[in-house]
Image 1 (cartoon, rainbow, N blue to C red):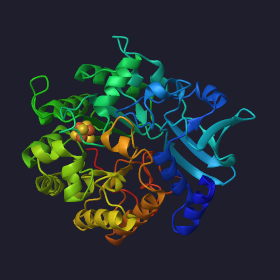
Image 2 (cartoon, rainbow, N blue to C red; image 1 turned 120 degrees about the horizontal axis):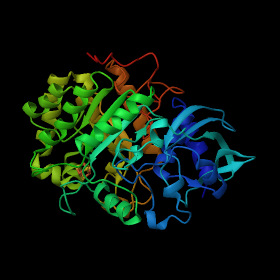
Image 3 (tube, rainbow, N blue to C red; image 1 turned 90 degrees about the vertical axis):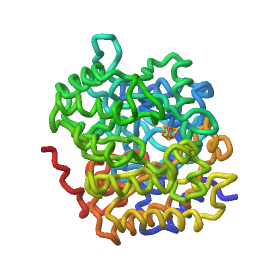
Image 4 (cartoon, rainbow, N blue to C red; image 1 turned 45 degrees about the vertical axis):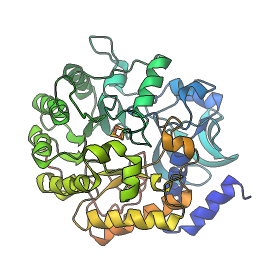
Amino acid sequence: MPSRLEQLEHTVAAHPSLPREAVVKEDLLRTGIAFGPEALRLAERFKKKAYFIFSFDLVPLAAMPQGEHWHAPEELWLEGGGWEFRPTVVSVRLNPASPYRVEAQEGEAVLLLEGEELAQVKFPPVPEYYTRALASGKRVIEIAPTIEWGYLVYLTVFRICQYWGDQEECQFCDINENYRQQTKAGRPYTGVKSVEEILEALEIIAATDSASRAYTITGGSVTSRLKGQSEVEFYAAYAEAIEQRFPHRWIGKMVAQALPPEEARRFKDAGIKIYHPNYEVWDARLFRQFCPGKDRYVGREEWMRRILQAAEIFGPACVIPNFVAGIEMARPHGFERVEDAIRSTAEGLQFFMSRGVSPRFTTWCPEPLTTLGKANPDGAPLEYHCRLLETWRDTHAHYGLPAPPGYGDPGLGRAVFSVSSFMDVISPAAPPPPVLLA
Ligand code: SF4
């Protein structure tokens, strides 16, 4: 059995058109990262993991021997080192048993795989607004954390999903379990953030920060009413308030269900520029299996139809549905062979990209409190993730599409999107279209 390092070297060699930084990034995201005690101490002075929506960890909080969840940084900046990394930003997904370890060497953090140094590590600086609190005492890190090295303000305004239990929750998603474990662990974690506290937090960010360029409004689905409001009413209220108070300050992005066009238009009218009606998985059988609530309330065909209808409202480049890369290989229902999984996902990419819509993906984190994570603790094979990167990049280039807007600069060494490598493999010569702020 080859060592993990040998497997990685073999995979890098088998995919010469991919930057090896992207291969390592995908492997880190699917495997998670362990921290040595001294590295955790070094990280203490930097921007910590805010648990901005899901756990994005490979073990439950209760299984963190060093209380890593209180100390680990939000992201890593990998550069230089033994593999001469060009700058690469990767989200921290904790796994104390991971073969990838961040350790301190002579007072500096490095990334090791089975003892081999891959890259030097920088931790994200603490922004001024993270030292501030709202009048209520709630901290900005809880109400309006930032990710992607400070580019994106992440507003999870509803930390729970009304798809509830085995028969409704998406089987890869731990939003509800994560809410339970965070509150049990004593982390301040507001279930429903008020419009007023979002505005107050953004006021502090606007006054102290110049790095953030976009915000995302997101949270669980609303299938009945929340505070007397439907899903579109609830989420649009935040966008309206933000755009009235801070016109054109950030690019507004909205993650919500695929809503009927007249409802999606309300987001546009509120000032939202980019809409993310996430379809999660392309294959029809797996959509029904893995997203039972979405399938029952909306239905897969209708979901895809609404994505295209939204493209007429926002413009195709500004509708960016996400899928969870790797779940199509989850046992026992997923594809067994990488080529079959890629063929299915490529079909979805063709379907959308030929119409000017660029789906993007989050690399699957097999969280242990989810149905799919329990059955698939190792996630999908690295080979799948490499083939997907190639397929996504080549299909995107084939249709001559611009880099998806709202993610910062594309290209290796410049991209800051941290939960998959799709931005790292886009040519820097394909800049995003200008997203009109007026
Ligand atoms: S709709 Fe699915 S993916 Fe989205 S928050 Fe609810 S359970 Fe999670």
